[in-house]
Image (tube, rainbow, N blue to C red; front, side):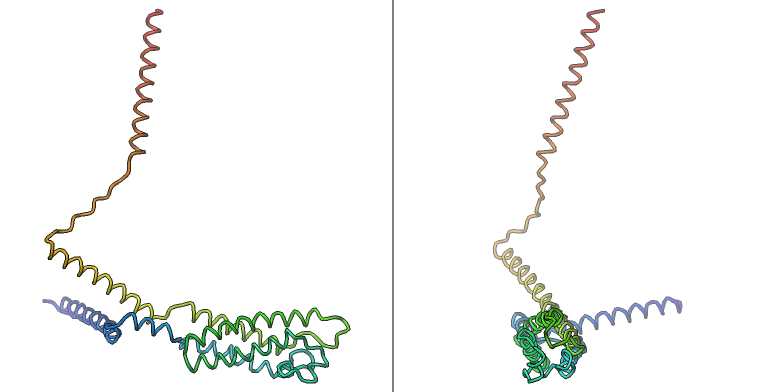
Length: 256
């Protein structure tokens, strides 16, 4: 055997070993859950894996936190709106703006709770509060923009804009986390499908052994009645056409 052939054989063996090892690693990763795949899938659905989304959650958390200490509108800061201070009262802070600030703080606290607990219940509540807070933040900007001319307040400040951006990032990130299955959940679901298929095959094999009846091949029945009727109409039309031509030729010969 030449050196090139030996090198090719060694490369193939290495590739096969790597594939076998990768397959074994994949099986071992779910080996601890094989006894109760349904329970493992249920437990996996109760927790939130935010590892890849943690930077977005951090940005969505920090922007509103900083925005609460920035100008909400003119001389009014975010914390003035939150606690409805004398400054907020003087500059005509409306009730929707106060509701927005309460919802925003609640969404931020729930975000911290989601990160700490990884609970899907907390994450769903967080998602709902973040969505409603985002809607109220848009409403708060509209209230600032459409205030009367005699109102002592001013337009939206950059603190309010920061809160809107942060709530948008937070809401979109939570939506992606809650409405998308993780890789582990997909692996568990695939393992459950394989388990059901193997169980069905084993049951079919056991039934064949008990009854001695071999499975019959499934014959596909094609409904070609329309095609046959169409072909029959064509043959009838062709026959009538020929018959008419023969009659016409006989008539022409008789006249001659």
